Structure formats: C-alpha cells, structure tokens
Image (cartoon, rainbow, N blue to C red; front, side, top):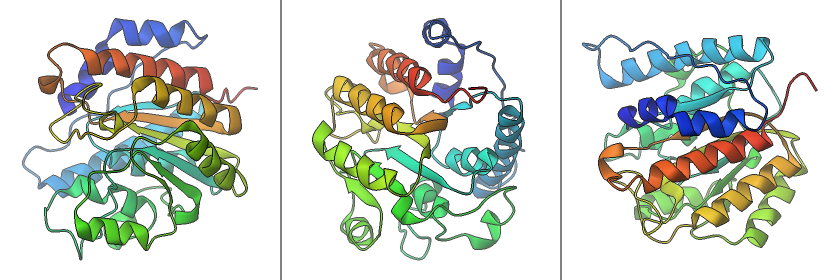
Length: 267
C-alpha cells in the first residue's frame, strides 16, 4: 500500500484535477524510516515526521492532502493541524478501532482510529508533536462493515457516530448534523477500501457492502458544505489489486472532490 501512495503522488491526472480547482500543487515526500527498525517504531517515526511537515504546511497557509499507505498517518496529520477543536470524518470498510489489549492480528494499522481518539499506546502517542486525542463524540465513521465480533462489540460500546455499510446520503447527513453541533472544522480521512469491492478493489482487505463511488463523492461534498475541511488523506491503495485502474480512477475523483471542499486558509 506504500507503493500506492507513491503512485498517486506521481499521477499527473490526479494533480491536474486538483490544479483545475484553483490549487497550486506541490509535493513533499516524508523520508523513509530506518529499515532495520521494528514496524511500530518505523511507523511512529514516520508519524512524527509527518506531523512536522503538516505543521509547516499549515503555517504556510497550505492545505495538507496526505497520500499514505496506512491509516496511522492520521495521527501525524491531525497532530500537525494544531487545532484543539477538530472533528474527524473517517471513511473506511474497517473500524481501525482495536485497542492493543484486545487485538489478535498484530496489525498496527487496525489501531489507528483508537489511537487517534486516545486509546492504547499512551507512551508512543506522547512522542508525537502536537498530538491531542480527539473525543469519540467528534468522529463520524462511515462505511464500516468488515469486522470481527469483538471489533463490533467495541464499536457498539463507543461514542463514535457510526454510519455503517452502504450508507445513504440521508443517514450520513444526519450524522454530520450531530457532529456540526460540536465542531466546525474537520480532518477528512478516506481509506479507499471504503468503496464496495464491486466498484473498485483498493487492496487485499476490500469488502462487499460498501458505497458506490458516486455516493461517496456526494457525501464528501456534504462534508465540504457543512465544515471547514482543514486537512485530508487518501490511504490504503495497493496497485497490485487494481489491474484495470478502477481504484486509481476513483482516487483521482476523490482527490478532486477533496480539493473542491478544502478550506483555503487565506480566506
């Protein structure tokens, strides 16, 4: 999936689609972490570097659109935004809400949203410059459907605003109204495997029962109409599972919709 981030960053059609909406596009790449380090250490090192890069971008009144292999990048993006009253709108087929104490897969990425909201890995999270947990009540999780029983129980016991499966626009809009009662600006996170697998297979974890691309784009538009979107990410694209470039096409459309909704900090 790291290869997917690089492919998106180099894609001229994606860049042109963003430029056509009035943005001057520049590209900054986070240098790789030390390859001999353990996975979790490498990941958090990259998160810290990303936090500094996002902080620099926002100080320059730029909009950070992060193209990342995994969802843990959200920790660095949100930390770099430096906003204490930020909400999150998170599109994903998976909850990414595992606590280390309950996780059985050993897959660090499925803990992303839990960490973002202050659960697990306390000492590691404290090393991320600017990190402050987002209250669960300030998060909309949309499209989630592929979960183990314990993950479903954890999600049901949480205070996240959940719009599961192939949600319709009305249900999503209701969730946004609830979120808007508490925050006015958001970080927008799009894991491309939120799309139904019949629409586009983003990676090996893609699942049926998700929204179409048109529905996703409409909901991204709703986010931009109701909130100041101050940073965003497109994550988890693996080109090895996209031989016909359908996911690449979807990512271009998603990037353009984010660019249309993005908050110009000089306005």
